[in-house]
Image (spheres, rainbow, N blue to C red):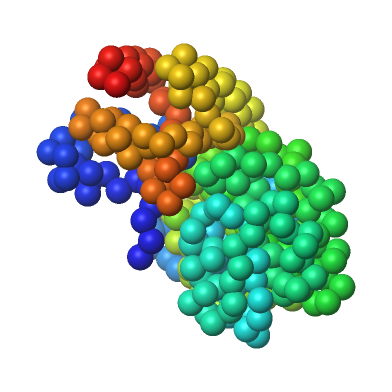
Length: 329
C-alpha cells in the first residue's frame, strides 16, 4: 500500500512518543470535528436503506442532481477503472498518489502530466484525472478551463475525473452542478472538511447511467446506517458550514504567515493545509517528529505538507518547535 498521512501509531513507535502526545498535522483535515449527534438504535440494528434522505441532503449541499454515496472517495478511485476498457490515462501531477496507482493496477497506460502539458497530451488520452484544489500543491483550476478539457474528452467518449476532496472551502469553484454531463465525474470527500475522516464517507457525482454502473461495483449496504445518519446531520448544518469555512480560511492564512516568519515560504496550499518545498524537507520532518509533531513528507520532490493546528496550545507548540529548528540550523 502507498504511504499516506495520519499514520500516528507508526510514528509513536518509531519516535518513542506516546500516541496521545502528538500534534498530528499530517493529514490535511479540518482540526475541528463536527459534533456527532445521537445515533438512533435502529441505525445500528437494521440494514441501511437508500431512501433515508442522505442522497437528497448531499444533492442540496453539493448543488448536484444526483449522487452516489460510497465508503470514502478512495473506494470510487479504486472502482472507476473497472467501468472502462483499458486505454490511456493522464493524471495531473504531482497529486494524491492513489489515482495513478488505481489506473495502473487496472492495466491502463498512465502518464503523469504537468499542468502546462495537459493541452498537448489531452487528445491522446481516454481519461484525464485532476485533483482540484490539488493535494499537496494547492493548485486550483478554474471551472471554464476544466469544462473545456471535459468537452474535448467527451467528444471522443473520454472522461474527465475531478477529485474535489478539498473543495468544500471554495464551493464556487466546484463542478458539482455540471456533473450530470456525460463523461464528467466529480468525487467529493466528506471527512476532510467535516473533520470526521474515520466515518469513511464520500460521494460520486456523475450522470445517472454511470452512477448505476458504479453502484453495481460498490455493492449493497456499502455505507453504514450510522454513517448515513451522521452524514445527513452534517450536510444540512448550513450555519456550521459558514463557521467551518471561516475558521479554516483564517487558520490557513495564519499558518502561511507563521511559516513565512521562519523563512519557510509555502509554495502552495489551500484552506486546509500549506505546502512547502525545501531541500531540508527530510531534516525538518525528522526534527519535528522527534518533538511529537507529525508532518506529511513527500520524499520524491523534497516537500512537506502542514495541516492546520486546532487550538492555541497547538499553535504555540508549533511555533516553539520552529524557533528551536531555526536555532539549531
